Length: 440
Image (cartoon, rainbow, N blue to C red; front, side, top):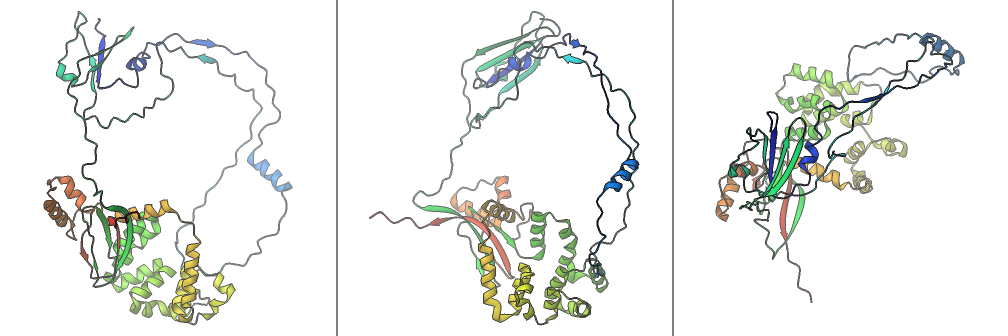
């Protein structure tokens, strides 16, 4: 041994998939490299790159000629979405290239060979070792004494019996492996601790319920169910922002506090964000302010759209003609069915048939449902008393251990909720199904 000798020791339960020597033996000093000088070749050039100004003149000369813009001139935009300053960028014309000899090709360099047993490509191991409770013991950069001896405490290696020793110095790499007496190795119990009743049938169900005022929503099993409550515009808006990641939707968050705004603040927000969507929202949520401020504006519009006529209560029977009806989107068609009671059933069938024609996207639907279930996963308050109900249930079952992780998970599970406002509930439960009848 010399002062630069270092020893690395690895203790494992099983034989490793990769040889430590194969990884450490390639660490070597730099070796001489070889260089090959290329032969000098003759080069010939034809033409050169012309400048942007000359190229523009030539392209303009031979470009095909077309008539000018004959489209209808744009009309005045009453509610521009964004008013901002324009930015003008300039492109400087580039000069052409000169005739010049090309540079000599670079010399080819031969890399030194890798000594030892090198590593080829990336290594991947698909072994599953989750059942081991302890990791392998790794002792690195151990310095032996002057006689080349190294003494270790057996407890430092743990209960592992396969010992892999790699000794390295600036000139050599040595690898040895040996086996010790097998110790008492602890294992993780990966078996299902609490299974379902084998005498019953269970299915995982996804359910979306609209709870009317005065109705009650009950989950039979609080320990195996999850639910999320959407009882306000703020919670629905937060879900849509998460799903769409639309910055425009974030800007419209002022509608959540619309009743608390002063008249001047309402007019300022309306002047900045006036649109069909805001008109429809205010007509539903603040009809008095809509009639005082927005209705006169819509009545004096020269060219009214479908939504303008809908909000003004005008006759919409003209949109039943095929040409006008085809130009409506699906939301406008639903509103048309609401206004014309005689066409309500036909419009309902039309929307249902259009929906049935859409190919089902199971993955997308599951993603939306799971996202809705996690709406309050970061909240710490227990506004529905779910945590207390879950603790009480576990105490009755004799399974409550008082761990902090159970308290954190409690917010994700559901129980019994009484609703005083119109509310949408998203839930998932492992509901028992009736047992299959015996075979005849």
